[in-house]
Image 1 (cartoon, rainbow, N blue to C red):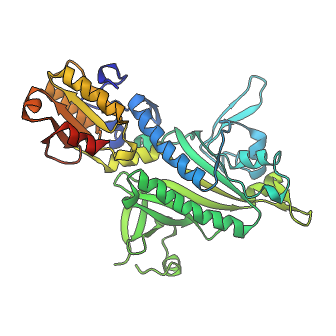
Image 2: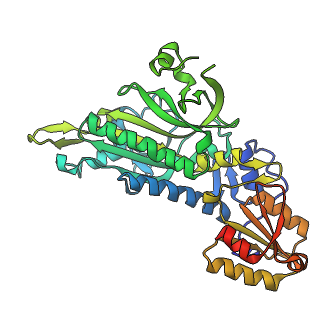
Image 3: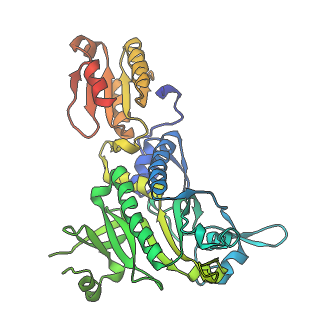
Length: 411
């Protein structure tokens, strides 16, 4: 893509009311636009990153048997009354409204009730189980304060998967598979080395739930990490009993701030009982289906990446989720740059060509701010020296290399 045609604009400063580093940098680099606190428009650069994160998630969910679908954000009050989660005293962050005929509606903050109710229309026999539907969809939560940029919004994307199993054994088998799938997601997005499987409160149906917490000063949670076992404990369940139960001791646990990027829960039959979501077993008798819930926030992942991989000059995207692989900057060598641009595209390289009529200093500053992994500068000076100037965003020095060497590095 030619940068002169890209719908974006860099800024020297972020809005004065934006305190989160991730949002400050994403706004300045032209990835997002802040509509209001907790609500951001994803501009073309930001949408490319978000789509790559979603695709990684989608691939890993499909690999463990997930079936993608899309449920409505508009929710009927009647679907939520059976579990008592329509009550504001139980869930205090609903966005609620009503139809012109007076019917009460809510904007979904999650979908356990909706999917359990839906499955009553389609689930009959044990032969249909297990089943793992998921979606990547907008959710709405009326947060009292939205202060962490795109990491905690009032309107946000969530991948929510729900498992339907015949019994606890079948449920537990899939639950363990999701742990590995989630680990794969965060490794592929570049934050695996900073992300820990974290033991948290399990609620009514299991001893623990599991969160995936990424170490960052921007995090809103406190966890205690055991690096040897690669696990952590959420502060909410940090007790002597839990520490002993996990076979840990208190030099071995390191306290840290973290951001929750994913979570998995065993739900037992709470939602299936409430909605009479049953199946007929091999003996012809009805049984309640055993459920689980599995969430990842794609924008939370994106914001966490920015918090971790940025410096005083801007963002430094991991290769797998960068909006483009190569940032090509031409300085008084547009004809040669266009030929290289065409060659890179022919080789399947995603390239952003800064063909703007702008000063070199502005082009370099914008390149650092935008944070594409590989920067290439082509100019009469580099051509005379034997090729192009190549620099990784994460490295301080640039080198002159041949076009052939370049193609080997980025293709």
